Image 1 (cartoon, rainbow, N blue to C red):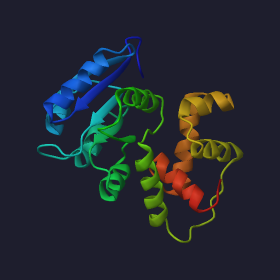
Image 2: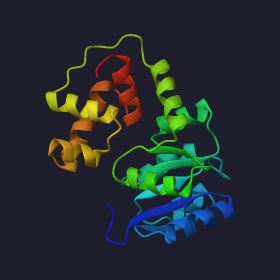
Image 3: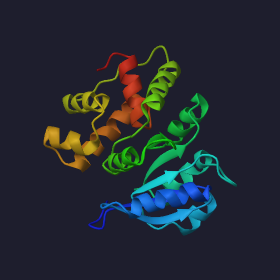
Length: 213
């Protein structure tokens, strides 16, 4: 949960100039606060305090960002992890999403858009560079089984699934349906269970593929 001092952001990035540039952007913008910056995943896991959003590089010395993503989630279950990388190939995008990434942006993303993406992630959204989003949906469609059992959603679950495919984050969905954020998360957890998926992108892709929305 973000506090009055702003969204807490941690950076795990081995390129010092880029890492320090991110730090100064965050520290120089109202509503954001950098709580730590680290050159490796191992250092981040050891030193990172409680945070709202983690900006995580893929190619790091030691363990890669993707390979260590589960460890970050385990140690900081409330943190939203955005992959911030130069890689835009199918393999890295798919592996990151499968590992539980909450967003995937390229390092060439303008600072203003990056700050917006951090806000989206902190609010329960899944920010992605447009090209990456198209690649992710296309890949997930290819990986969805050709046949699947009939899935029965409650009326509320169906409403929320439609709003997810419209790109709305959890907070906006709650406001639209006049329900609490915890209630939205509970419904989405049930949707994931019924679709046998683990992320929002997988749920949306599967729903579109099978004509559920």
